[in-house]
Length: 285
Length: 268
Image (cartoon, rainbow over all chains, first blue to last red; front, side, top):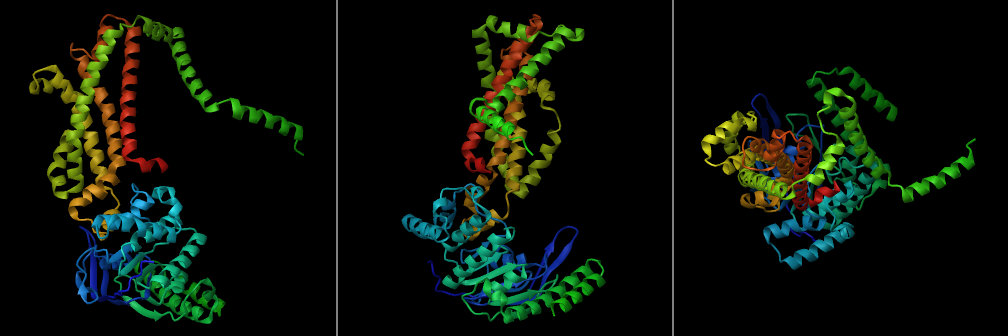
């Protein structure tokens, strides 16, 4: 496996970021401080539209903070770099390249390693993600799960220091999604490189995370960091454990509070949601 | 209760059909037959259309076709169409790339295009006489003009609509600004570029026929007009058919080249 020995951490210091258009100025992030620990799997969860993708874009270097600092190993992030690679929401494989050519893309673009070496590593990675038979297929010929695996391989061949996962399993069917989560867990536990995983699914978040960062509504910041001290290696069987349920209840409460705040802000009534949530809590005991 | 004998009986018939009858081909031939039948009925039984040649007359006209003359005219039209089309690609494609890729160039160039574009290309015919001394260059200019805007607009659209994730991913992998266009933007835009080229080829044929009808310098448009002048309507219709065939051949040609550049699209 392409093991990354060097482990990096990413730190946000009082980051503010807005979106500006002619008519509407929105503050997406404000006073946002967070810490993506080295060699850990940090999961960012929050209500939809709260700026999770903005966090990813800031770390990847696609956007710059309006205020504050985004630091990687103490150095400010200055632009996109192979050290910080993103696996995008929907597939961002290059549709005109085959699976093999997609994985080869990074090394050949940078000419970082010789062609033979790149070829060898590509074949190894394709083998690892179970796509060696599909090396000459175009992305459109692959299923959703295969596309995500190809994308993981395309990122991993560059030996990134930080992997940024932007809701990578969204849009997959339930079964494939579960398989991909377990697959991703194995991959993470093997490589141990710093990962930031963004999701809006709580169960997915807990099963994956070393640390769970719960975000608030816009303008967003990290409301609470929950340590997920479940044993590794993990699989879905831990979903029955007591600790899992505790963490879930805690996170759920925070998320619901944010969701209700969000619905108030957008003018919907508070009563129904709150009553519903109380009912849910009593029903669950 | 279902009748089993009926099911087994029909199963034999279904297998027979599957092996020996190509229904999709039958339906396609039927479609053409209905078209010709409709045409015949229209011309033979409705007095209003009695001057239009019957399918039979057009078919018989094939045997009286002055083949060398027609071939020469086809060649002339092809030359003009391909000439205009290639000049259109040569100029239109880079311009489309420029105004799709650069916001500044877009603001500088696009508004003036928008002013000119609503004018139907055929309305340019009188003015081309001022620009170009001989008919050949006038005709090529008109076909170029017909091809130019579809190419520019589709190239521009294709480039500006590339999913932002693709250049972003490439940036992370270390593709610089200079190579981005070549390695990511252009390949991603290719399908729409070729949509534009197909449209452009259609416009080029429209324009060439219109231009040739205005003059006596040969070409299939002229050939149609000449037969109209001598009131030989079966040959008019036949020539129309030949023009359609030529247009289709050109369109297939563009399609073949396009398929090469967008191989991956075959599987979509």
